[in-house]
Length: 511
Image (cartoon, rainbow, N blue to C red; front, side, top):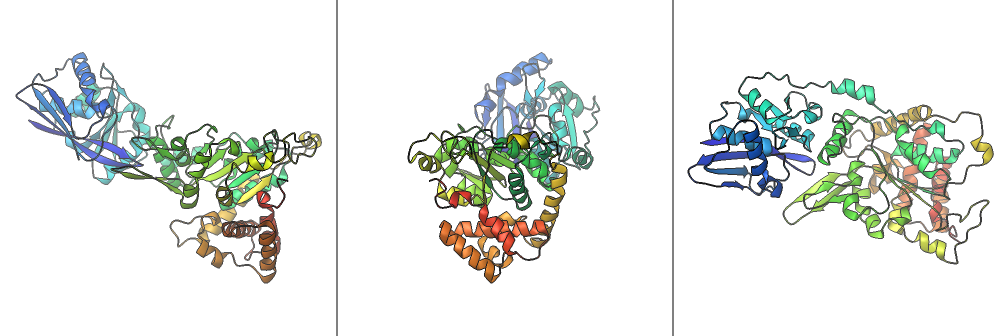
């Protein structure tokens, strides 16, 4: 007897339906074919133990499980439940006609209890797209799958509950989630606030500009100046996630198994990997390519603290994602693309001891050491960072000041207004949402400047030795400053402020 059940395989951030065919016939042995990995091949032991524990029997005849299409690699123990139900139906121990109407996923313990699986959101999206009635999956994953409407999400805690559901002995109400209500309740709730930061008004201004235009920032300053504190507060002034952005972000975290409580991610991610991170962990990859930190920070912030301490190879692999806002991972048989539209916030000391250019403490680094330290970060990478900002230590008077600092709630509406201006400007472009995303040919049209502005920029370019890419960055930042000011055209003061945010390009900065 031939039985078909349906599971799903995740490649990148997309899911593909897998047809699981089970035949029980004369002979012996158990075979799984169709490019399964070791975890699937080992499913026989888990399934046999679970069937016996629940009072069923494993067929003592030849059992063949085929997972189609055969050219897609299937990985993980999430196919335990559909294979087990297929075996029971093929051996006439399960009586139902409903198996073909549902995507079924779940890893089984030896007693038949189900454990949660990864990638449920893309699986549910694909199930709805292909017209399945619903999805049967572990209860721990139900809330995540229920984000997808018009799909019956059937949560089960064990193989026995799944059997009882399909045979009609157990009525299970599909899980429902009001995503919009959930989204509105949790949106933009951050523990960190700019009101906690005393002084540093110029840095707050730079971060406000970065948030308004989606620009990358590097902060250079001595230890204890507040670089990390400021960076952690950046998500609190970013515009709230749209529903589409929330779904995209949740999808990536679902595939990576990073959704702690299930459900919809409604706050912008903030990722801060340690400087010992590997190339693959940062950009993604592996045998079965998984998203890296830059994809996990999609629609949010990636914070690289102590930038020169990262391996040079790690930093260099970021150059293409920073430009293209996606990561392509190629293998012999497959090429997978992960989205990576993130804001990069980096921080660094000006030298190994940390006190170069410090107003009070003396730098103890030897001759040439400062330049050597700065050279750990390549010029092409710095070119891709729009704002270079010097952070100076906060004075005692600033720390003890009683006047309350401006809060994130005060700054965020200004950022929102600037983003709305940009949304209207780029309304006809599907892949451009902020000034930072403008391609070079568009910069010439949108960032037009006066003759006086051209003369100022020419002088700055010649004096600082800026590259063509840095020229574009200055114009983009000036456009954002004009948007924050509500100005139609880029004025000379907007251009002057944008030029000052190129600290690392200044001649003689490193001695």
